[in-house]
Length: 235
Image (cartoon, rainbow, N blue to C red; front, top):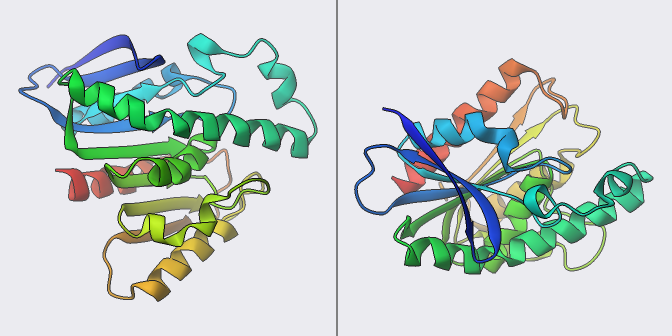
């Protein structure tokens, strides 16, 4: 099976679409959100993996990134940690707020099955995932890799436990991650398990010894977990 890539703009959002060349009818769609400072092209390999697994993979340029990159984004990223985090969270919220219109656009154009929508993100993209689950009820499956549901300012996603109970949520963290410590995601899943002890809708994976810029071995494990989870809940 080969993969077709298309660059599109839907609902005002620049996208890189990857889909199987033999796709027939709307497929389950997975929106992929990148990290702080990069863009939708960064994860072309992962988009191809998703397409090969039978999904329409939708690489999203986050707000202020890629084709709509802020002119001072480099300076904002290089700012002191608290200031850079504030910028990242602001852009993560803006990106998550675009998800409902983006999902509608994908469905209206016949590119996605509206009953099988998933989201995945890495680092800043993992933050976007936690917010997107709260803003778009159509999301059936979500994977946050190296993200946090607990934000230092504003209406932090971790305060809305009920919003995560309707979505199949996988969180993958790195045990030794100093950029995004795993404690907040671990605690969210503890609370979800406490609320619904027998639910198979939530899974937490903490990669032993892994750091934020993880090794190839750890990244492959994260992707294996991601593909299994999305296939289980969307296909």
